[in-house]
Amino acid sequence: MSNNNGINISKGIDWWTVLLYAVLVSIGILCIFMVEYKTDTNWLSSLFTGKTNYSKQIWFAGFCTVVATFILLSDSKLYTAFANLLYVFGIFLMLLTFVLGKDINGSRSWIPMGGGFNLQPAEVCKIFAALALAKFISRQDTDFSKPTAQIIAAAIALAPAVLSVAQNETGLALVYASFFIVMFREGLPSWILIVGFSFGTLVVATLIVEPNLLAIILTVIAGVSVYIMRRQIKRNKALLIAIIGLWVFCVGVQRFAVPYIFNNVFHCYQSQRIYSMVGKDYDCSQNRSAKAGAANDKPVKKPDDYNVRQSKIAIGSGGILGRGFLKGTQTRGKYVPEQHTDFIFTSLGEAFGFTGCLIFLGIYLALLFRIVKIAERQRSTFSRVYAYSVASILFLHIAINVCMTIGLFPIIGIPLPLISYGGSSLLTFTILIFIMIRLDADKHMVLR
Image (cartoon, rainbow, N blue to C red; front, side):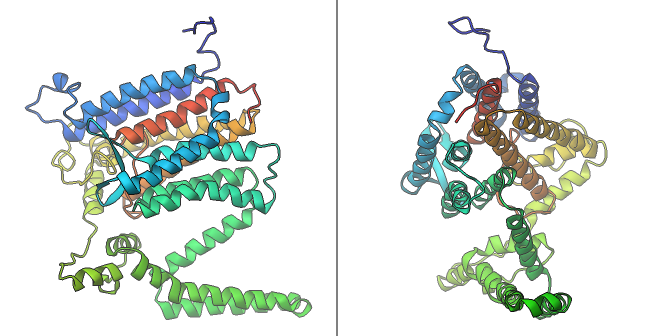
């Protein structure tokens, strides 16, 4: 293939990545077909009617193929030139949802485009945030070892996340945390990761351990720390003040901050899902939204873990080798809610079993390793940061979605990349991956 100037377009293209992409998209269409196909339907004619979700996904895939080809034909310099402008446009689209947004499943994060297609700006904005972050870090005047640069980079990543939370899209907001993995690769101090992990551990401990017992444990840890560091404390009294201050902060978080957030910030169903993840039961009578519903004489139904239980049953019923293609009783019987979108992994688990899931996750792992390899061979900081952004976004999506379906993570509504049904999601990941492939084809260039 060549363009009008006779230049070979395929030169430098990483075809292994393209192949892995095509395999995953094909698996996604197959999974949607498995959960939606009806035996009284002519499967061949139904593939291209556009009336079923699997036929729509085929059309989405065809459109994405055109978009991918267009990206491969484009000039890599376009992505550095328009990175900031695209980011501003993405933020604008997310703000536009508050005016023109369509409410779907309790989330006002969709803009109707006509023809039954809805655009989710929070999905598309991941591309723009990745480009903007790469643009900022690759600037000649950016010293990423300085706190100012780190704060600006964090703001670029977190601005769309804040808007996603306001749209009631907590899952997509969480994905923007993946950019911090990229920032660590570029020199963000490791102590920030340690602090973040410690804080997360404290929150989980608050949910699991009885409040008074946890306070005692924290006090004992502080006391032991003072004893071990007694010599250093004699030379520097500020160390003792720091330990006491940290103890006060931790006890305050577990006794006041976490309960307040779960009872006054989160909705009842959100708190219940998080508590269910750690095997606990949340009392919805303590929740502000539940109390408001009761005050308005609206019956407040306590949410349960029905989705996760059905998902576990479906995956577990597949056993080692699976029930076979179109032979699943749980997914074919539509016992699993949202099984063509957020819970699409269940169809693989039931049809092809543990072995099939391992092979499937192996394909994902191969794609991630390929992207990391692409990132590390870039001469340009812009291309490297962008490639790592793609890998981080994919990794977080995969990890959260799979853990969600087997009950290791709360249900937050996040698609499985290239597999779950949805035009916005498929288009987003297609653009993400093929921009990276385009940049890699010009890896000899230094882009800024």
